[in-house]
Amino acid sequence: MLGLNGKDTRLFLIVVALVVFAPFILNPFPDGVGMAQFNAGYPDLMQKLVIFGIFAVGYNILFGLTGYLSFGHAAFLGVGSYAGVWMMKLLTMNVIPALIVSVIVAGLFSLLIGFVSLRRTGIYFSILTLAFAQMCYSLAYSVLTPVTGGETGLTLSLNDPRVIGATQAADGNIPAPHLFGLEMGSSFELALAGWNFTFNVGYYLCGFVMLVAFYLSVRLFRSPFGLMLRAIKSNQTRMSYTGLNPRPYALAAFVISGMYAGLAGGLMVAMDPLAGAERMLWTASGEVVLMTILGGAGTLIGPILGAGVIAYLESIISTIGSTVLHNWFAGLPEWLENTLVNIIYPFVGSGWHLTLGLVFMLVVIFLPGGIVEGGKRISGLFGRKTEGDTTVTGEAADTTTATKPGE
Image 1 (tube, rainbow, N blue to C red):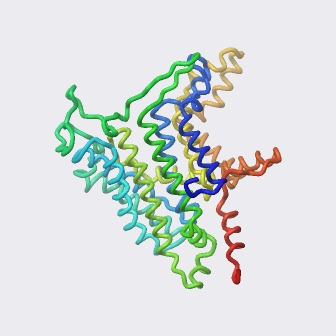
Image 2: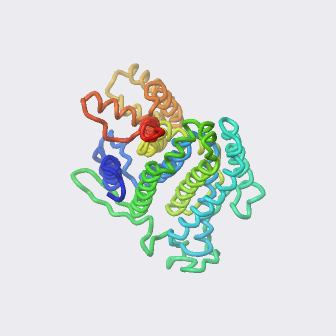
Image 3: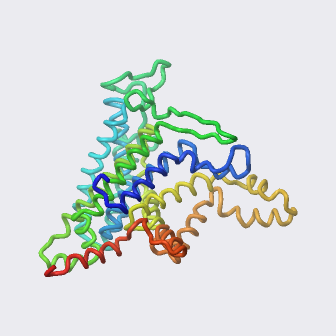
């Protein structure tokens, strides 16, 4: 199917099903019950899940395949966001041109940074990318304020010299981003036996883009180019001895990864036309590293799962406060209720990072291959052959076997 083998086709269809039925999957509890606190089927969060999924899938092309650990990918996310807003200010509120320009600008910017950074490897490469990202963050707040909006960020206004489309809507407000007239904020709600499901146009656009991005990443993983990237991670020195220069391949992976980040930034703007320098902060780069490792670096679906876990923890766990905790344990004796609240409270609300850190620590210690490895272990317990993702290690081993000299 579409050039994929049977295993990859099944995996792709699973991702398609998750995207299409996400409004149902992410709303497991009916409205009005206490557990509805954990529902995640509202548009803003679903959009965030798939956008960060794109970001992580792109990062995995660089880190998962080549082993180059970049701490500066948030710079491409921010550049893509700024490019998208400027397209909406100058050309049209249709999101398609904004997405295209976001990808192109981020690709060119990553080509420049990658050309310099890839002159070094290991920790020196990581430090260089971090330095470039912090430079971009600082410039966005200072010298480039006329372009980036500085501390307030880059936003739309009624005075934008937009070439295509009106500068203001019929009600006098700023026009909303749209896809050929279909506004990103448009939603359809379905009430069913105590559940309320929301189907949002913006989410399904992001979901479609993520499916395309995921499909392309699968094709890249299985391509000869993907094999060359694995060779870089496996033994770059040996690759050089064979007469192959690894730098062009690593640079190509860096640029492709940067374009994915730019696409994610463009989608953020398509959902909410605002770009701020905080998207370039080093913590944003750290988050995509966590997403990739948590899900399973070098796997196909792992980065998407990791992005989903982190986005969920940030959006749901961070909203749980002491009042909610007291309501959960209201039926217990007062001393026990207060004890449980005092134990759990540091890990929720503003302390959700502690929960994330604990989850990440447990995964790294017990599941070095990420969530995907956990799925394989569970599948193995039931005696079923794993049909899910394939790690780089396994694929590289197969490739080595298949390309022995003389065969």
